[in-house]
Length: 303
Image (tube, rainbow, N blue to C red; front, side, top):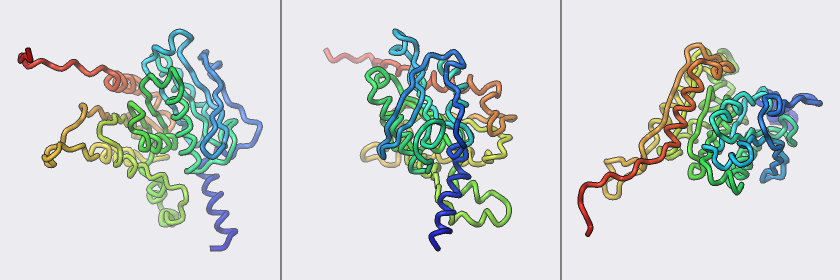
């Protein structure tokens, strides 16, 4: 393959996969002020020295330490994080802190988007929350929509011990799988895909004790709902931990809290507006964040 063709495949694919990451300047990025949300501008430095400009929406002073948790929100490919603040507003209204993360190349962040780069961005966001003296004491929830689902799945798969739950909406099993389902010749060119996003494989490696919520719009014509169905099958068949010496009997460390919810009229970008969407999200979070019941005594005494 000659150098010119190689460059076209590499950068042309990035332009298609991350269109808003190549938008012309000046760019308009809505701030949380627009929705009346208190916030801080957060500058993150990734492992490869790229600066990201994000928003942290804390509960007001004196209250954010008592928030139910902190949600890191990853947006889709054709928007910037300012267009995603409706998610933050809903979560904030239920007493969560929210980190609205902006990818490299998107919004006002530096750099050029790529799969490996966005994964570093997500890790930088999680590391920020984990190292914050207040936020680190609260449960961390990872949330992603569309491309953001792929980003969320990647960071969750690498840090399952640091997060309390994963929530994804209208995302894909992998980028090549999206291409395969396109009719015609293009569906046979998956070997040329450079941005892989192997989400199904990453979910299969997650511990079954990590609660996962999957939200699927059945009228999604961008990423067919079959992707979410396949991800759900993978999530439900993760191998549970085993008892020592009794490999045939699985033992879960805590009750499985996974949830799969479909929305009959949900399109790719409108599923979030469906009537039962947010009640489903908050019911899931209520279940995830509920305290484990105290052990039940069997009536025996050690005295």
